[in-house]
Image (cartoon, rainbow, N blue to C red; front, side, top):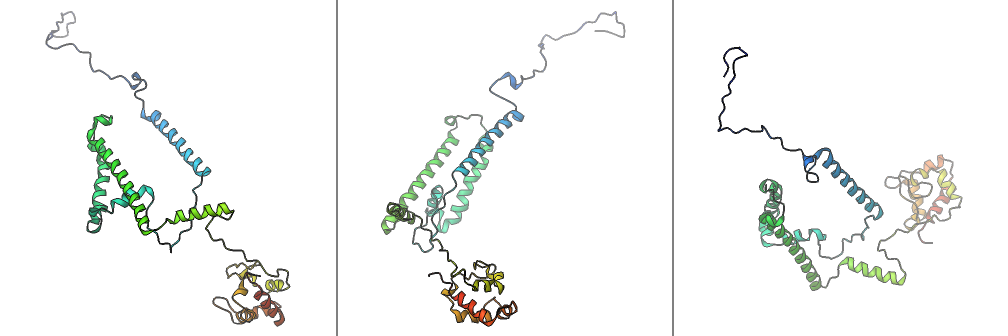
Length: 290
């Protein structure tokens, strides 16, 4: 032990044999010391996840473009069928039939049980904090998972089985099956297979009649269009099916509904009474069946 500032004085270090010499703070090796087992989250891991996500998204877009969703048959509100949801909701459909999930217990079935189930999923990362990832080493989590899968499979199968039995007991055939069978019959006969009702195009009768020019001169095209299909006003194609010549003359002179009187407008446009009479006669000829 030194005293004062004399540099020539012998320095004696006093040690304790009970304290072992250490190497100081040990710095753990970097993740690069474990190739293939660990890597930096940013940017390595994040870039890989982004690339995988892009590939999956592109695949979904390609499938969507190449295979557009098919349109089903038009809905028939008058059809007497037993309503049933899509297959992926069948287990919920059957679950809500259970005694303690419907009726007086509907609140328990819809909010209570489902709230506990989804709440457990949200709390699972906080409740199950073990490092073990092998399912057979995690009996509680694995048991709940298999129990949930078994319940979904059971409820789905039960719902579909009961549906088929109910249809058989009432003698009903699903409407989609009937339509498919009808389409198959029509296909075999070479007939159209679509059940959709297509509106028939009504053509203009006597398109070259001079009254067509009178129709345009009287400014009727401002509401009914030059092709008589309507431009803010009703279509006049097939108007002869519901109105005769006298009724059309009355509408021109007195108006109807939101249509004002057009008689004075036609006279102002240069038409005579004979022209208006010929125009009404031509419009009365506009029938869907000729």
